[in-house]
Amino acid sequence: MHRRHFLLSSAGAACALAAPSSNPVTVLYNDRTIKLEQSRPDPKDLWIRAADLPRINDFTLKPQGACRADMCIPVPRQFRSGAWFNLSGFAGRVHQANVHEAGVWSFGEIPVVRGEFYRSRIAPDFAVPDRKGHMVHLSDFRGRKVLVITWASW
Amino acid sequence: MAAAQDTGGEAAAGRWYDRANATFTTLVDAQHAVSSAYQFINVPMGIWVDEKGQVARPAEPAWNSDQVMKITPEKSIATEGQVYVAALRDWVRNGERSRYALSDEEFARRVKPRSPAEMEADASFKLAVWFHEKGNDQLAAKYWEHAQDLNPDDWNYSRQEWTFGKDAGQKWMEKFQKLDKPYYPPLDIRK
Image (cartoon, rainbow over all chains, first blue to last red; front, side, top):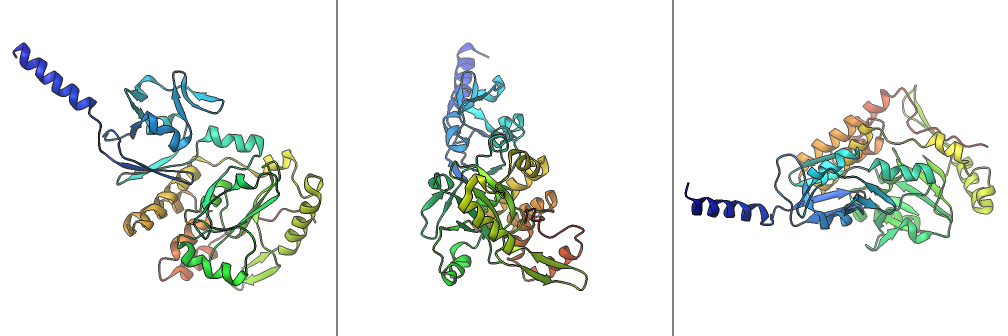
C-alpha cells in the first residue's frame, strides 16, 4: 500500500472513531428517565458520554474514579475511551443489575449507594408527580413527620 | 402522603382520591417509584419518616381498619388497622420517644438489602412499565414476567400486570391458593 493511501485510510478510520454517534438510548434509574441523544455503538455494553453520567446517577468521573458525594469508586482504564464511559461495565463492577432491550436500559439500585439507607436510616428520596403533575420529593417535607403509604385501584 | 401505585396514572386513581376528599399530598406513581424506594411488595404498605428524614418504621402493611377477608374456606386475609393507627397517633404525639419508633437494632433486623435477583426484578419491572407506556405490550409482558420470575414474593409485580388482562381475578386466586406464607408481611407491632 502506498504511504499516502495508508495515511488517508488511517485518517478516515480515525475520523470514524472520533465522530459522535447519533445512537440514542433511554436510561431508567430510580425514578429517572434519561434520554441520551448519543451513545457509542457496542454489541454488549452501554457507552455513554462521560458528561451525561451525573444526570443518570449523580456520579461524576474524576481522575480518581467515579465519584458521588464523598464516595469515589476506582474505574478500570478500559471503561474510559476519550469522552466515552462504559456505564454497563461500571454497573457490573458495582454489582448493579441492569436489563435492556430496544435501546432502553433499566438499571437497578447501586448497592454501595443503597447501603447508606441501611446504615443511616435516612429514607431514600424520590421524585413523583402529584395529581397536577408537580414533582413532589420526600425531602420537601424535611422537618415534619411523614407517613408515606401506597395504595392501588387494583 | 399517599402514592397511587398504578400504571394507569390519574385516570385510574383520580376518582378514588376525589371520593376520599383527600386533604393530604396525593401522588400519582405510575412507575411504582415509592415501592421501589422502600421495598414494598404489596399494597397498602407504608413507612414512617421523622423530621430528620430517618425512617422510624420501615415497610409494613398500612391498613386503617381490622378486617378478615375470607378468600377460600381454608384461607383468609386478616388486616390489623386499629393497632396500626393507634401506634401512628402515638408516634405523631411522642416522636422518637414513642415505643413504636424502632430502635436501630430493630430497624436493622427488619430491613435487609435486596438480593441480586430482587435487584434485577426491580430493574425489569421498570423496563416493563416503560414498554407498557409506549404501547409495546409484547416487551412489557416479557419484562413483567421476568420480574415476577425473579421475585415471586412481590405481589405488586403480579397484581399490576394482571390489570391489563381479562383474567386478573383468576390469576390472583391461583397464586393466592398456592401461598404457603402470609399474603401480607406480618404487622410486627407491639400493642
